[in-house]
Length: 223
Image: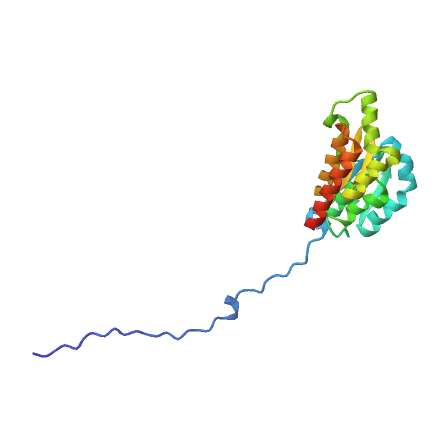
């Protein structure tokens, strides 16, 4: 009886065809970085800062000190609208960063609150700076002579207490009647605010100084 040969499976090899140029992936597109005015779909962005009556004279005196860094370095247009009593800021086509507009608005606002130009200009150069405002009545309800004495405790004789807190905490403080404004970094504002609140609540200056020394020594160790 004849034996049948086992069936073998034939595999037909098809030679691979080289990929044509048309099937290859196109090169990655290279886009230029968007400019500030292109990020907002070409819309011009505005900020307006109100000018309180008592800041007209200082604004007039220091106008060029405010105008020069905003216009030349931050590339933001600025003008004073006398009719509306506001400082108006707007972006330009060559503004390098859209966040410059808000930085300039914060700088002008800090000047309106009573900070010196030399101190407020730090808001343009550093990112981690803030302005915090609060009133004496937010801490304790005081009236008449009690309120006057609290304001006197905050300033000290010839502003000595205020300067001591500023130097110890690396902040700047403005006491405008019952309103208090603090310019500085987040951690430093907290230390300065705690010291001012202690003074408002009636702590003697000596006790606040000693507590400040402890806190600043601890901060110095940390960094």
